[in-house]
Image 1 (tube, rainbow, N blue to C red):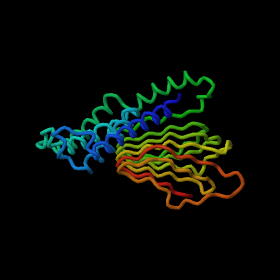
Image 2: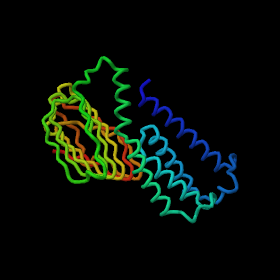
Image 3: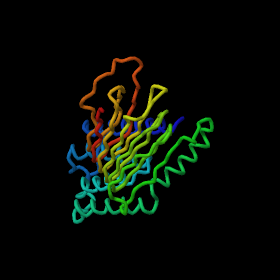
Image 4: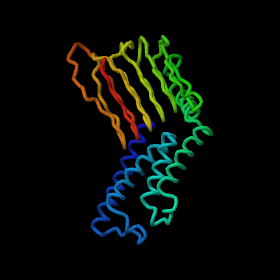
Length: 264
């Protein structure tokens, strides 16, 4: 079972369990503790959404997606927990500081490298010589950066944090791209990429930032991204009816940010 499939199964089980609890609560079958009785229905619904985001972020080792939902939960349940003195701004500031601190102590790029090594051992049949991994940006590298390299990579990874960058993908045999941005802006151009196999998968993760994907008009885009307190849409979608158009599947998540799909 792949990690993605396991993540989807666990997420589904969590959502079903939370949905059942909400229904039982409204039918007075499930009685909340007295301390939580004063929390509004919308507050509990938002809390459910935050728990789901928190769960996904824990699986992805995504620190802002862990600490900011925790801050949101603290704000919602501030009165029952008797922490109104530090909500909302103190807990939000603490969430920001902890997100930066954990990224400094245990960078997600370090986690990705170790996960990638494990994935390489488990998938010996894949040619990993054509994989490119970009170094993550940190707060000391927040100037605008443009990568105009001419690479031949089949699998491309780009990650940026607290910065601004433009990436030009010029692969002659692109199969997949893994892209992420946290507290920054990333523009990725696919108009020079070639996809002989007819299908490319793009994994896009946006948190507290913005990502723009410049996709060729000859590609059929299937947008499967999920957005929580963010926006992910393809407003100019038109199905390509030409002969054997490239199938582009975009997956991932957007939290407190935006993913823009732009046709070129």
